[in-house]
Length: 482
Ligand SMILES: Cc1ncc(COP(=O)(O)O)c(C=O)c1O
Image 1 (cartoon, rainbow, N blue to C red):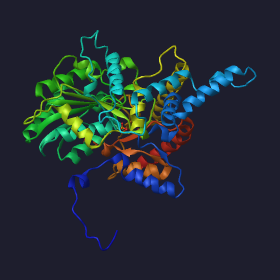
Image 2: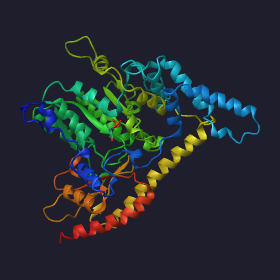
Image 3: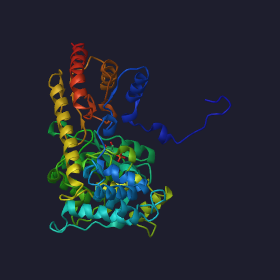
Image 4: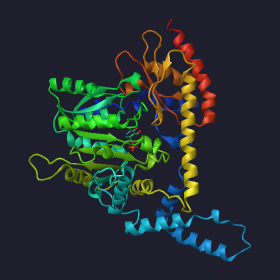
């Protein structure tokens, strides 16, 4: 700090904003790592940081659209190989024609390549591909639904970019409130705080697998309204982070009816939709059908089996955007205006969103390797969640509700030494074993309860080594209770 520069006042909302996922525990982990301690970073859903390999198909296309000369080079090499029967190279040593063709078609559509700004909401061909993906996923024709409109789709810098666009636009004044589930992913509390609005909690029912019912939503709504809050929207995270809960049709319908009756918008965070089987996932767009409720749905390349967090790609789809009071714009026009101020999301993230919604189809040359990699990643994730759940059964006073729908488990710590909290526990766990988790209080929880969140991402061999140490640490730590 320079002694000659006087302190200044800054936006207080930024000072008050909290984001536990990158809070004091991960900060301490970084210090310990500098001192040479081995850290197992389970505090964040960052799959490739824990060794999850990227999908070959995604990366081959991405590298070819970035370095276009390699497309012609690859084709030339293939021709040489065809003409030379003595070569020991095999077809599989070359990049498949599918990948070459896909890369060429992306470049043809982009026209100006990867280094140029795109339209602020993303190029039309990517938005059309997203619309087609949504239409197919939701089978809108057979279900009497509504066709997705590419003009109401926005490419964003991860889902986080879309969440920020929506919440900042919805909050007009301090008493404008957004309902969020507790526990929640702290992007929501932080974004509401940054926008200067009011966070309205609805508490998920832990023992019912972290779900909710209409009464619970109504109660939270009524309480807030009685306190002068003007509720503008409700956030639903499905599958849930940190809970892993997967909502069925009845729950999704309940939220829609609730939003319709109170004339509020739904913000549906569906970034984990590819972590579960297609028939387990009920999208809000599908359930909404022709009902005229404002819906913002978010998806991302960061999760699922692709795990491309660092490339920052995502999309936001808007249905039934409301008109804006005192203006001839509607909410989607306002989002275009907001998006245009940051010019465009990065092009690599946009290309990966395109590939996410446009995956190799059965029968294509790229399909066998793609599906093999996808299945391996998803089955490894399921195995790792099972290993950790099993370890919990050997830890005194640990109960884990909720599903395995996202990348996390959120166990309850029923026994802690007197006067300590889940924060103290997570810090001690880190110091003792190197396992970096996040305290439940960072996501919100019912008063008097304690939890932690762990991302089930470390390789199985590493889990097999550290879980026994965690069990030993835990049982010693909680023994101090008695
Ligand atoms: C529920 C949820 N929504 C949004 C995000 C942000 O994702 P992105 O990397 O796409 O910004 C995350 C990241 O962990 C998340 O868990």
